[in-house]
Length: 120
Image (cartoon, rainbow, N blue to C red; front, side, top):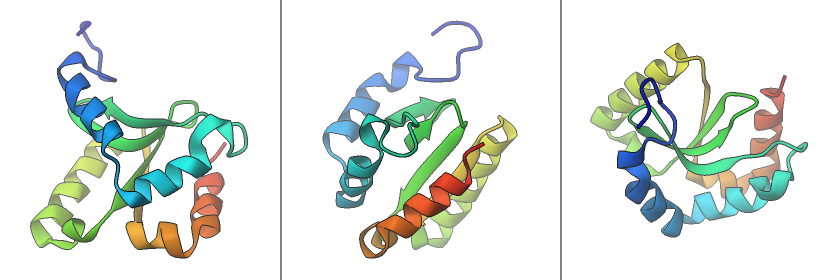
């Protein structure tokens, strides 16, 4: 890792690959809508690391992070961990959006509209 590097650090490479190769159903669904610059020409990356965190989706030009949350994120400890993680990422200058997995299936266009509202 280069000094000061915070994105795609080498020690997380294998974990990022594992997550990309074993996505949740919600991640697969949203990825089909984001890949190949389909959303207003923005390029998204899957399972991108920033600092010590691996984020579900990342759009570099917008400094936008998208996280999809399943049931495990409803646990009080995980709620607190997610909050602290999001605050650290915001401190680094990133925008963080969180969506429940079920929303990706129930209202994908609504999810995309919310994402587009974050574009500059």
